[in-house]
Structures are given as C-alpha cells and as structure tokens.
Image 1 (cartoon, rainbow, N blue to C red):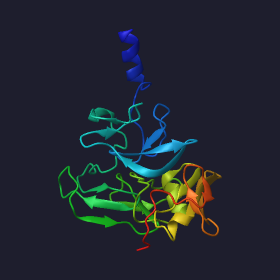
Image 2: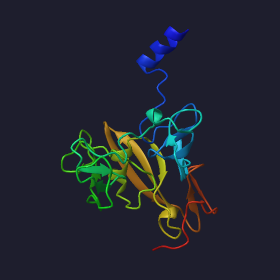
Image 3: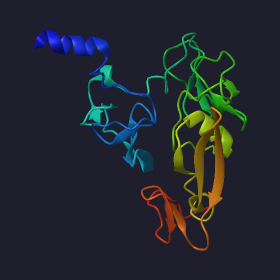
Image 4: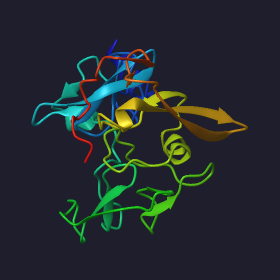
Length: 216
C-alpha cells in the first residue's frame, strides 16, 4: 500500500497544489493567491475573496487552508523572479524585490494592455495568445483591465464580476470565451437597479457582499 501511495505521489495523482483560479474537485474552491481563495459555483469562481488564517496557505486539498507550505498553490504569485528583480502581485500589479527573495514596498503597475509575468525580464507583456499570461491573476486586483486582456490572462470560459464599486462595476460583468484558440471578453451591464451575482451568474436587485458603497 505504501508503495502505491508513493507511486501516486510521484506521478502527481495526489498532488494537492494547483494553479491560480483553478477550481479544486476536493474543496470546490480555487486559490487566487498563496493565502486567498474563492469558492466555485458550477466550476466558476464566485465573489468574495476569502483569506486563510495567519500562518496557513491556500491549497487544493479538501481542507483549503493548510500550514504545510509544500502544498501551497499559486506558487508564482507574490514570489520574486529568479533574478530577484520583481514579484507579480496581481494581473497588472508588481513589487520590486531589490535583490532579495522578499517583495519590497516599492510597487508599480503595468499599462492597461499588459499583464505581469514572472518570466518576463521586462515585468510586463501583452496578454495575447502565445504571449504573456498573468502569473498572479488575483480576482480582487484594484486595477481593472479591459475585457479582452482580462480573459486572456484568466483563460477560463464563464462570466466574471468586473469590480466591487456599487454604482458602477458591481453592475457589470465580463463574459470570457475562446474563438479559434484566441480568448476574448465582452463587457455587459445589468439593467436598471440590478447587480451581477457571481453565484448565479445572473443580474438581480440583491447587492453582492463584496460591493462597496462608494464609487471612488
């Protein structure tokens, strides 16, 4: 039995690590950073973003947050590049590492058409098919990007909340789809006094819990 277990581990069958924004069949949740996760509804991420307790990490296990760092998911999010120059913190946000393995407080953001990629020596690159994919596609990134760029960084079909500002972005959602191997996104707005509900992927009058009451 032990030999079988070791073989499964070696083959990755029991590997409890996962990429960012990938729903786990064990927990029905997806890690969006090394310490944050979102629950999944019909294999689609649903707001809000949840944080693991201090000292634990997000994993693909049935128990989402674990103290064992070897199981951590989103291993490129918040991790300094191999040359210790920078770390991606979000779709477009990054922090300088200044030659150390810890991100500093010096942060920046990519241009609207670019995404942060840990393997890019220039930090930011175009989010195109065959081009850059965001190393850290946090769903709560404050710097919202255009729908096509967002979908090319997430590369998962479905409807996604566009933001958490009550009077504006809470009424909007992005629909991601792929056509001829290229990812596209379309931005839609809920009618009247309705808001996009990540859990049902529909618009209704209920205010999502993640929405802010101020627009600035």
